[in-house]
Length: 371
Image 1 (tube, one colour):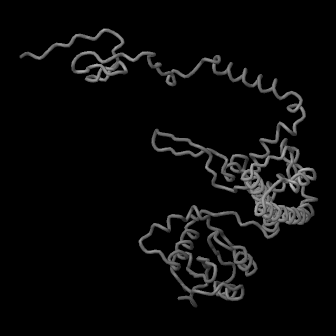
Image 2: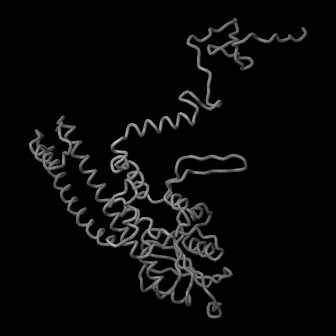
């Protein structure tokens, strides 16, 4: 069957760290071959060459997929990347193995039901590597500085300085009265902070060199709150922005849109989905918080602007005391009604236990059943 079939082949790859399973099938879904290989560029290239010219290849966006995508693209294959959330249902099957996973990926691709992820070009992936590594270094530095503050708190030492890790702060930190073990830890942490500072500066150079002539990098810094660092994050993580039809799709991809669950006439909307780049969401929040410090008109008159906004909101709501009728609740009485009657028919909240209604007004007389 393999020698007789000359059409386009669909290839599914279940990629792992050391070994991978490759399933080749026809466009009609008939399996041609299933093979397990050791992860090696030469072995993968030779196996894909058996699929003929221009095969459709799908692999999951899992650990270390960069090299496999580059090898497949160099071999003339059209690479598709399966989104991990879209194929999460594979884990609930009764029988799950590597061959079934690879075959299911190929079936989804040939039926046009594959939830695809973005295959970033090599240049974008390299820029992402630099930007993400810089963000990781900054996070490590923040953790080291927090450890220094924790050691000072253990010794009950408070250094009155705005920047503890500046020139003046370091001088005061070196003269702080600390015991032997605590002094040794603070000195070690300061040396690590200096090392991380050097690495951050070393990574910032290549990032600036790659984005020096980027039009989008310059244009996005016109947005209030977005500086060179945040602009680099947006450019690297978004990649080719023209792949999004509009801003709604871009915000949904970043996980900044609210969760939406709808069934029949019931609609539930919750918080943002956060199903996207964590670095993009962090950059968006940082830019929003940085607006009052970068926009000149808001820095000069911050309070009048906020007061005007509050007045506008009150006008929209109909005044400071206006509220939706369904949100109004009767207030509890200052002195709850005592129980009345030997059987305790009225509870301490003034409600009829027997009928579940309020007893604020006169009760309606009820007819007793005939004896």
